[in-house]
Image (tube, rainbow, N blue to C red; front, top):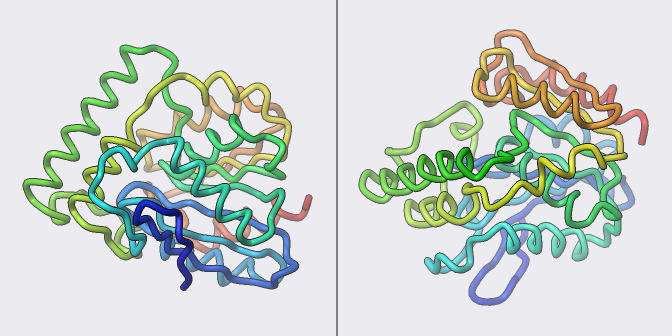
Amino acid sequence: MATLDRGNGVALNYQVDGPDDGIPFLLTHGFGASNEMWQGQADALSDRFKIIRWDMRGHGQTQCPDDPALFTHDNTLADMTALLDHEGANKAIIGGHSLGGFMSMRFHAAMPERVRGLYLQACGPGYRKAEARDAWNQRAYERAGIIEEQGIDGLTQGSEAAASVRGTAQGLANAARGILTQVDATVMEDLPSIAVPTLILVGDQDLPFVDGTAYMEAKIPGAQRVVVEGATHGVNVDEPAIVNDALAAFLKVF
């Protein structure tokens, strides 16, 4: 493990697996999880790829003051950019799970010139209408309140979170309010402009995201979509061999 100082008391925890001259592949976890959820993929892919996996603010072992202003989409994108810069990666395959997948798409919308490919796991593209975003955000605020009242145990734990190091209750509450929430339709509007190889993957039991991934497949030109039978939200933890095979086939284009 290593840390990257981002100022204002923020120190990103991250890990690099694979050769320094390997093709960079940045992996971002989902809400409530951490970089450990990607251990199976790091083990399988680090012979050729330089796997960079990290903990978002409020998660895992990343250090961040309990200042809500530090938890934003823009700061998350800046953290991703800083990690790539620190590792000398001008362009990378950008991938993520759930919230990490959404932030990967948002990264593409902001900096498409730095994206070689996209891996989008168990995620959705957000919402076009303000009313839908408001409903999502209300649930995120409620989740933050539950975490503050009940601690980490108040957070529903999926297989990907069970494989992770948990952050602090206040950090996760801040992340729920500032990173998990939706602010606009940027990702939705960017989908048709994605021109890099894209793999979308979801478990067939992950009902909240099955339809969202189908929508993404229809909107992203040339995107591939793999639906893993019997898998839940933490699909790469539930079925690592299937996910690794799908990734290996996809990554042959790089």
